[in-house]
Image 1: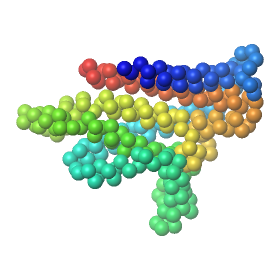
Image 2: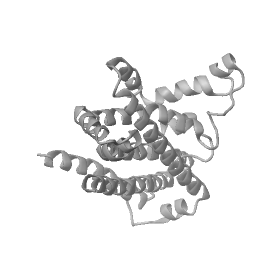
Image 3: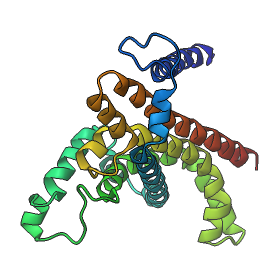
Image 4: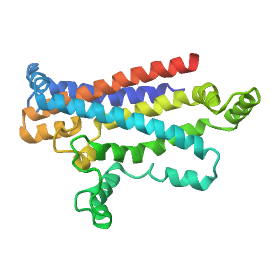
Length: 264
């Protein structure tokens, strides 16, 4: 029953990868001619690309880890509350990332609304070299998404198992470790994979909130297309293929983690 969906996704994702690979090996306007790996050599030997890769990986891992930790705490608290608190927490989910980034710039940038109201902020969020503002925007956007996934698994069946464990003498930490965690770790791993893969290849948030240097992989690719009309497309494709490879590696790791979680 899943075959049509799997085939469609494979064609769309595989077709995009094939087109990017072809573009990266043909640094011409029409992506024709003999194979030429010069774009790969230029990208892999570019110190700016190395900095962009490190920045993207650091941002993705930090945002994903923090969002997962906060989501576990928030979902544990929200499952015992009513519908209104859950609704309020889920409000950021349908909001576009670009809109959140623009609001963050309006409020948190130097001279922004927050600084005018409160005075000088203790931390620099916009254009911070460490990418703090990028992480904050992703936390605001992705944590509710992970909370939604976790709440879907924290139903009445989990409550009954927790109550049974409490009757047998398990304290709160033991119930979280032995009952709650085995239930939520598979959807948490899947959701974290989605978040990390998205952050690795996203453009709008680093472009609006992130530092001018180092760039993210997506902004690095965009810069390459603006620096050189002909070979820039090939270098951009090579850079984005590295991001795709990192996402695939994360997917493999997440699948193994989820499989181990389901089968002990």
